Image 1: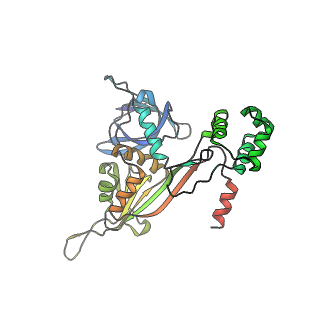
Image 2: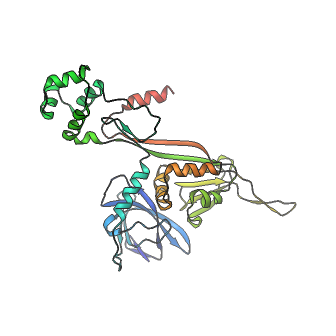
Image 3: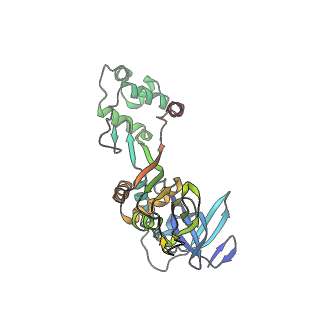
Length: 323
């Protein structure tokens, strides 16, 4: 039993994943909750909950101790958590930290020249042009920058003209004074599509996604020449399209055509990261597993969180237009 906007409902709230885990150590998180009734998910809510009250992130598909939901789509829904009788250790924040690590598939730190995106990347050294650009971002003159770093203006000028090599000691001092510069550029997946020529949608759910099959709603479709769609909680966040089995009119035998496409939308990638956490694997591990089932990547969108304005949006738009 749960109360939704002061109206009692005979639903069982089911945890379906986190839809927002960008802010480390946040006291409030956004999760997706399904309302189960007679073993069927009737509707879903994206609700804000207290990470402290939650204590632990449930497994996907498990009941969650929400007693009340209030709000609307415009202002957002908020949920109250029933207090547990047990003395539980609050591990929600630790799990959110792990989700952030899974989500950030690439990091790049300009000042330190560090990257974990790929070993093959040729990372440039922080040079005179970088220093000029950083100084412009900080809105500092050579004189004011020198004063704050407690060095001479002539030293800053020699760095910027290339007359003197920029040392690690100087970069460390810059980071100590301007702490925001330590922020990295973060890369995360925003859309993933995979095709499997030898599997059905139910096999993808069981063997590739490894998510409870009863959380997917089966319905007909005519999109992309497929005839069946399996949608996570009935929504197009995580869904698989394939061919529904048909009966041969002559032999009366059930015939199954193979081939399927898996879609993880922007919200779907965030939801699926909880499943990755539960399976103790990363995105890289997931793609390797997909390849074992002859999975072929057909679309991979990335989102870049540019923490301090390194990327010029006009340049990016122009590059896309020019292909």
